[in-house]
Image (tube, rainbow, N blue to C red; front, side, top):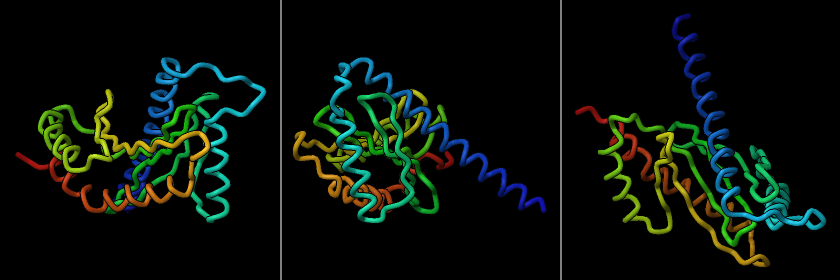
Length: 187
């Protein structure tokens, strides 16, 4: 009975952490949008909305499920989902906006403050090995893996975005355990 209660508590903590990651990402995108993006005219759909619509249509056609669509503001939209990597459920976001870039971001782990310095060195090593991916640590101490995808307005391809999500998952399958070992290793 005690084990069942412990498992329930673990699941509650995981769900809480995932909800916090979504909320933190929404706030982060809102702050960036306030600094960067001008307001778009209301009469025509924004580039971000066109990209999101293309992603939705592709996902529906390809029968991709488990996606949640969130509008942060008119200029920044998110597709929220989860990746299962090494037994862990990781929040994954596809961020589309009114710029030439879209982003795939996976929130990997929150680093305890006492482990931050030694983990940053390993994160820099990962960044040097994989130029197309960038590991960062946000102000809340979350390790975030970002894949930036440029595409001209008329060249946005949702199929490519979903294919790159698969590439990110493959990358994490190979490297997530090493990152976790580095963070949680006892000294």
